[in-house]
Length: 155
Image (cartoon, rainbow, N blue to C red; front, side, top):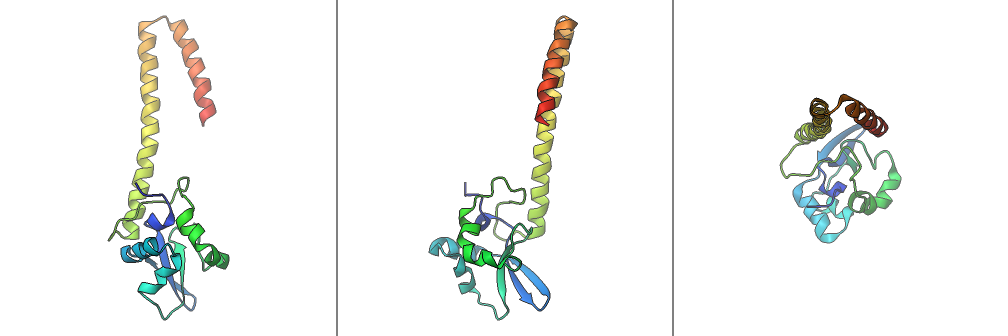
């Protein structure tokens, strides 16, 4: 499994800037491989040089060199070294996949994680109900009260 950094993310983009307009393009597989092989983020501009000013960014606006120009000095740290485990806008890059597909898949994955937590709570509730039918109701009331206090602190 690859590291969760911007280099391995579907939202890693190059912005071509023309006047006030910005045109994002996902960084290609060849450009990513070039960065990995040279360990130099600036090599992304070597394969396909552009006549228009170009900067790097996250398509989801987590970071953007066009807005924060100090990021150009910290490209390697931002793109390769910073691990994005706790960022909600990471989706693994797959060659040929567009940004819209990555957005939809990321959303679906996030919803499935939430549904998984909901299912766990339902299962706990069913076990409590089953125990209530099998044992004395007073014991179950204490158990439910205890579990309720635990779950109320987790939200």
